[in-house]
Amino acid sequence: MCDSNPAASRFPMKVQLDHLKKFTPLLSFLLALWCTKAGAQIIVLDDFTTGPQAGEGSVIIGSSWQGQVTQGLTTITIAGTAHDDNGWRAINLPVFDASAMHSITITGQLDAGNLAPSFNVEFFDNNFGAQAFSISSSSFVSGMTTVSIPIESWLIDSTKLTGWTIGGGDSSTTGPDFRMTLDQLALSPSAVPEPGACAALAGALALGFAAWRRRVRLH
Image (spheres, one colour):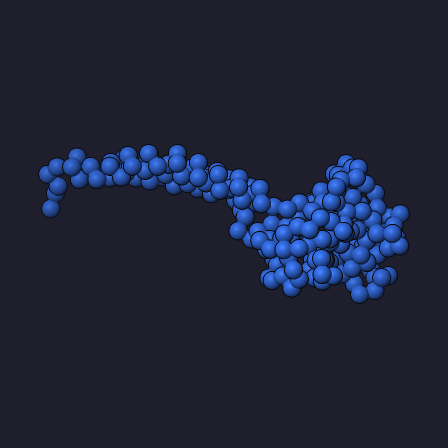
């Protein structure tokens, strides 16, 4: 049966479209606000920039990394005769709360000659507790890569962390050769979207709205 009043049949869709147009700027604003606030929650432990930075790491005296770390403008490169022992750390920091953090993100690249299949990032609390997280070297596929390691659960007092170290994936202090360039070490909540995810979500929202509007016009 044909509709004798096509305009009337389209009217409900027009009303919905008008409502959606009104709310789209608000949805976009809330999305941007959510992404901005979420991103601000990331705790950058070390960005490996030149010069002493309060709260950041340094070479552990007596480790195989001593004398084998080259400082760049925003990176450090571990080479020479460095092995996979604890070689870089920040300890006795002002107590900080990482209980809301559910992943470790590390940006870096494997360099020629690396033989370490993994390395650790270890955290310490103010009760002398320690917890190590292993990161597979194969996660760094090529070039500078950002790898995210989930923290399934904190076994130490994550509300009162006081330090961390990098290295020591092998139980021996003279483990396999370690060759890597590090750019950033951070903690982040698992719910935090990457900037690219925010952009993709915003783009999907815009494309979805445009496609829906074209479909409405065709009816």
